[in-house]
Structures are given as structure tokens and as C-alpha cells.
Amino acid sequence: MNVFPSDFTWGAATAAYQIEGAWNLDGKGESIWDRFSHTPGKIVNAANGDVACDHYHRFRGDIEIMRQIGLNAYRFSISWPRVLPNGVGAVNEKGIDFYDRLTDALLEANIEPYATLYHWDLPQALQDQGGWGNRDLVGQFAAYAALMGKRLGDRIKHWATLNEPWVIAFLGHRSGEHAPGLQDEALSLQVSHHLLVAHGAAIDALRATAPAVQAGIVINLWPSETMHNSEQELKIAHEQWQQDNAWFLDPLFRGSYPADVLEKYGARAPQILPGDMAQIARSLDWWGINYYARHVVGVAGPVPGSEYTEMGWEVHAPALERMLVRLNTTYALPPTYITENGAAFADEYNGDGRVRDPRRTDYLYAHLDAVARAMQQGVNMRGYFVWSLMDNFEWAWGYTKRFGVVYVDYATQTRVLKDSAKWYAQTITENALAPLNI
Image (cartoon, rainbow, N blue to C red; front, side, top):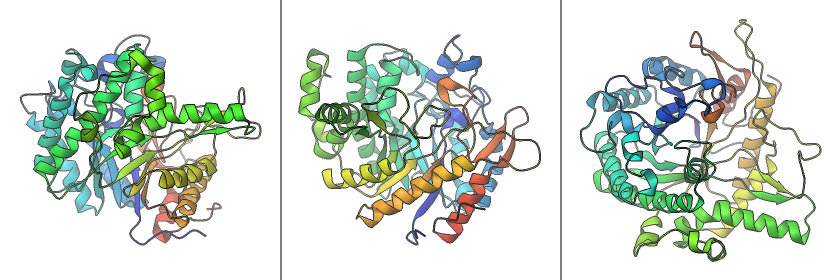
């Protein structure tokens, strides 16, 4: 039985656009995800986040659910256009008031708030000016960070600047499957650089306005592993790691992009201004890793013998342990959190007050075990946030994928704790992995 440190952070994570709803209420501005989800053909079943889980109106009940599970931390994101409808300029006091009330209610429940400044919902007004492809966004994001630090930094200690810059840059600007739906590789690379520079500028802004805060960033990582360990497979796996992961990790922790990747991109590589790399490599108080699955080189189709989630992602927790140990030996890391980890399965609710999701419980058990094993090898892991607190709007998949440990009936907004939530609650209570046969 793996026992965790007494001060280990046990949390759950969400994102504003995925749960809040109230997309045009109380002065909120339009986001790129509002525009994208209202564009025909972009989202499965023409779904959108207009209502989502109605967390904007139901947050107190959702905090009560967090208390039932026993969470001591909750990771959420702030909707930039809710507080600054145009991204800059006039502040929407009703928007900030929502996050004021949410923060105070969390603290009253003895749940530590972990705020993310940007989880993909850029104000559409800024996208109309070029979005993350426009260098001006660096300063605009820093000003937004300063505003939030000034207004909430007295109560929110832990802040993340960005969530998953890889997704923002490449799914939003290269493949186009996410908002703003662009398909331009050179642009996506420039966006990735602007995101990192903006991150560094936001770190400075947070510390200037709220010196006591703990500032960090959240990176999604998909390790590449090989099927047969051949020389060719190892070469491909290395290239994938460099291109997808080191592209963000090296600037943050070494102050430079991987030379081999820059050379490969050639003329498509981003324009880097003097001082940019030092800005990106600001020291971090903590950082978060979002981990769901690995890439496997050398196999066409599913890995024989492996289980897959509804997203088509392989379930393979040992890769998380290996990756954490590798990162710890490669970089000088700040305290590390798993800020997202979870699985989508086809959960059903028959009205009897119970949602049976043993595959998700198995998934969480295996991945928390991997975290514990990494800690035993010297990795400075401080906490774990399950993705997600509740079923929600899963971006381009709409409402067809359920990641929550809490079931949401979208027609009635009824919430039901799944069996995985009850298992997680027992694990939190015992501060050790609960048995799987509850």
C-alpha cells in the first residue's frame, strides 16, 4: 500500500469554458471557443458551452461535492473575457465578482484554490487583432495577469499562467481542430513562442502585484516509447519527444529551444527577439504535468494487450513513472504536480444513485501508484489533480466523452458521485491508495 506525504495535495481540475456556462451573461465578452463552437461543423453534435455544467450558478453545490470527496485543492481556470470582455480596457466587475465568490467559498470549505489564467478561451476581440500570432498579446496577457494578481492574489496562493501551450499552438493553429481553427504551421510555431514569452511576462506581473504567490505553468506531456526498441524506433521516439515535449521544456528549464528541432524547422522557426529566452526561463515556484497516455512507436493500430479509453488513448501507467524519473534526471525541476490525469469511459446512470465506473477507478489507482513509485525514486511530487471533477464539455467532442468522477445529467444538471469518486475519497482520507474492491 503506497502511503503519501501528510502534506500531499489532493485535488480535482476543471476549466472555465468546459463547465461555467453563462457564456453571455453579466457582461462577459465572447471567447474564441464561443465563436468556434457556434460555427457549424466544428463540434460533435453541434454542441457548445453555452450552459455546460452551469457552474456559474451552481458553484456552491459543486464545492459541497468537493467537500464530500474530501478534496483539499481545486484547480480551475479564469475566463479572460469574463473579467475583461475585450481582453484589455474596462474591467467587468460582475465577472471578477464571480471568481471572488468562488475563491471565498473554496477557502471557507478548506479547499485551496489553484487558479489558471489561461485555459484556451481567448477573448475574441483579441483574436480579431491576430490572437496569439500577434506579439502585442504578450503585454496584454501580462496586464491581465497583473489584474488578477491584484484582485485575488491575497487569497489565491497558487497560480498557473498557461494550460497546455502545445494544444493552444498546434491544435488551435496547425491542425485547426481547436479554436481558433487555423491551419498554418509557421503561425503555430510563432504562437508557441509568443505563449512562452507571455508566460514569462505573466510570472513577472504576478510577482510584482502579489509577491507571496506561487507561480508556475502547466504542460501536457505524451512520452514516446518504442514497441521493439529498434534503432529506428528509438530515433523516431527521440524526435517525437524533442518536437512535442522538449520544445516547451527546454526553453522553460534551460533557456533555449532544442537545436535539432530549430534546425529542422528552418525558415518556419519562430522569430525570437533579444531577451525572449531569458523571459521564458523565469524561475518557477512549481509546475504541473498533464498526463493521459503515451505514444508508441513501431506499432500500427492498438498495442496488443493494451486497454484503450473512449478517446482512443492507451491505458499505460508505467510510462508516467518512467517519464517523471526521466524529467527529474534531465532538468532541474521545481516542485511538481500532476495537474490533470484521468480517463473517458462510457458511463451510464440508471437513476439508482450510483454510477459504476470500475475502469476509471483502475486507471486512477494505477496512475497514482506510478506517482508514488516516482516519489520513491526521488521525484519531488507535491500533489495530484484528477481530471475531471465532473463530466463536462470536452472541446471538439462536445458532450460525447465523460471524464468526470462526478456524473452530470446535462438535461437536469443533476450531479451523482461515481464509484471512482468514492474510491478517490477513501484514498484521500487514508492518504494512501484505497483497495480496488470498494
